[in-house]
Length: 252
Image 1 (cartoon, helix red, strand yellow):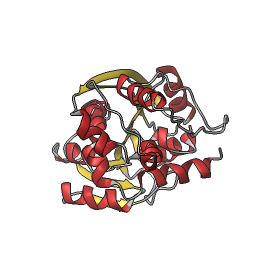
Image 2 (cartoon, one colour):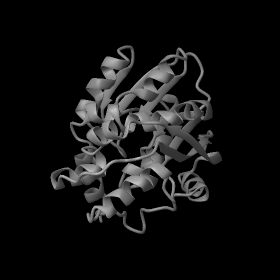
Image 3 (cartoon, helix red, strand yellow):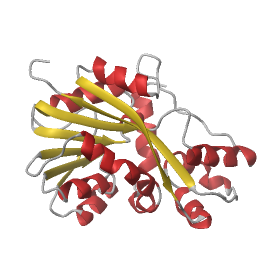
């Protein structure tokens, strides 16, 4: 699959679904926010860019530190919800790998579960680096492989119903291993320095019926909505991710 095809499919999977996303996957992704902001060393007065802001969870956390927040997302519905949640922030419609900002405009750039949703991860990281000031920080998260227990449970439930999930795969030249080492090497290849990477874990407990009702129409689960599949997720959703932090040095 080409990078353009991958990007188009990802945007289609999330388009116009801010409300459902906010009630489902945004709750999962919120588990990594504190790790992300700590890794980026967010301080009061810092200029922070939240890339792939979604419904504004990261932006809200950053705003609480008295930093100045700008958030971008590829979907209009996400931007609208985020703006209601964090009216003090500056939200804009924008996509990687071409952000509408000047070089070195931000003290830190955060991307919570964004790199795994773009067709050209290396180009995306290079763009994050471009808009980060020398001495600033870039902090990103990805879903690792093997998947978290919650993700694995949903996939297995779909298989048990006899359905097949069509996997969107990047071209080999654009892909990277979804491991600590793979993410670290990708950041280093994007000319970021002092890279650290670790796996973090948290648990999100959900009501099975409520979760399926909401989450079944979001992201790749959206593909199965028309199949009228009926099953219950019968356990709490465990989550895990790789979080990485790196520094943009002058002259690098």
